[in-house]
Length: 167
Image (cartoon, rainbow, N blue to C red; front, side, top):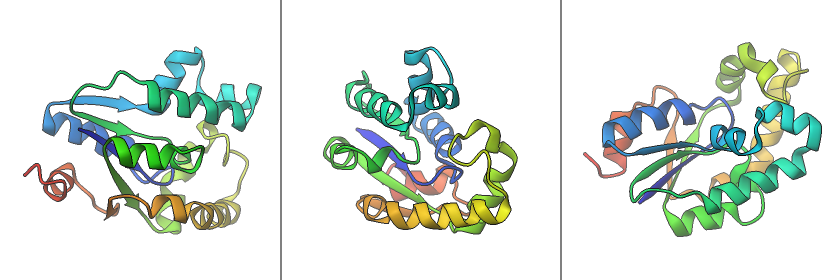
C-alpha cells in the first residue's frame, strides 16, 4: 500500500512522511528529492530554467513511474495533486491524506525558507498570505478528493498511523 501525503507547501508532508515511514518500517519517498536526483539539480533551479509546465510533467512522470515498495509513504509536492490526473492516480493506487492547515500557520512556517521555493521567494508577508489563500482556493477541489483529511496543526506520526488503522 502506498500512503500519499498531500497538502500545501509547509504543511509538514516531508516531516510527517519521515516519521510515519520510520514508525511503519517502510519505504520513504520524497517526490521532490527524487525529482532532484532524476534531473540532476534542485527544484528551484529546474523551475527557473525550464518553467513550471516542464517541472509538473517531470513530477507526474516520476509519481506514476516510481518503483514503490509494497508499503511506502510518499511526500508529494504541494501542487502535485493539481496537475494531469495525478490525484485520481494516487487515489486509485493508494491512500491519499490531505494535511490541512490555515493560511497564517502556513505563512509562518514558510517565511524562513522562501528562497528555496520558487513560487514564493519574492513575496513579503502580506503577499505570502494572499498567495497561500489564493492557491488553497484554486487547489481545494483537488485536495478535497483525498480519502483522509487531517488537521496539520500538532499532527504526529502516531496519530496519523492510528487514523490509517496501523495502530
